[in-house]
Image 1: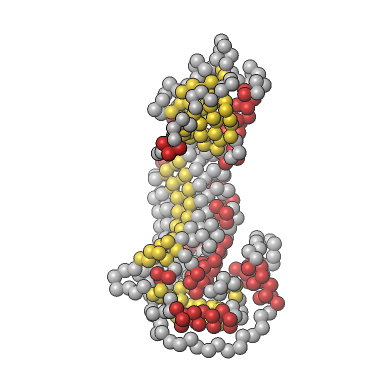
Image 2: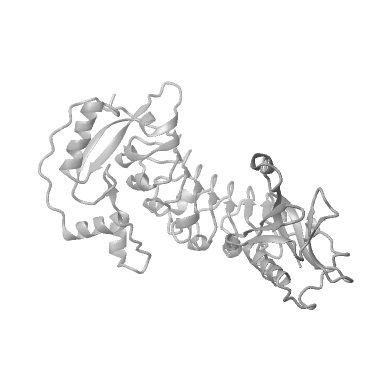
Length: 419
């Protein structure tokens, strides 16, 4: 039996600092085989640097087999002689089959029919026979005539003027990176959110702003998508549905037609890089005041600073309706409400929520105020063009008079955001 995997060989006789120095897994073939005459079982490790393979005996030579993370495609085999630790990283399905057979060999329960690979004739898997994990299509003639390989993890389709997304992509359950930049795509099908492992999605230089359909945001992408690039797409607004992607770490809306940023963007707890340069923004939402970004780029927009005035006194707020109280509780508890679980009007009402600086949702009853925010207060690195100032106006909503008064009281005491 042979599997294609990535391996690293650790030497237990060396100190830990040397044994794991420069640790790097390499593409390998791991063969579980049997000597045709002696009947002894062994593991042979083939790498690009060692085409002849390294042979490890199995009988009374296995110190430990660690399979705790087999579901993640990882396991470790510890040999007695030589004192090597073989770290294996592979696709979970073939790896589990390999582990199952390996355990049967150790327990001497394997039959002759189960393992027929000879240790004298076994060879490494040829590169052409290895599963395809990355595919780049830069011209129409590159398109696979028999469909996409099911083993794809990275797919790049660029500069071929596609207007739609191939439905075959939605069957690629291992896909982690999808790059469809430089095409003519206007609408993203909802089936995109069925991909279970998609982590990076690049859609720059398309026409998604014309389609104005954001139903694809959600589904499995809620738990997996961490990078989203929608630059150069003629998008007029950041969709409210973006808050359905709490795992987002990088969000790019450069070179669009934005005038406002959805208030819910401050509810993305893992967002670290946000870019919205070269748009028409004139204000940012107050929910961004609580963000901790590594990089922020809102240069080349239409910001105009407000005068530094004393905080105006707020009147008496009306009592919220039961509908608004219930909606606040639903969003505050992060309860899911997939399509079909609630009436369409209720889902639309929940999606239309704004957010207070404290993170609570607001709908109809709130206090509103606009003041200046120092960008360095929410980001370690701020990109600005020549002549631009480091502070921009923020349109802030407050869920209660307490939040409103506390914010302006702290502003007067510490003066961290208004200059």
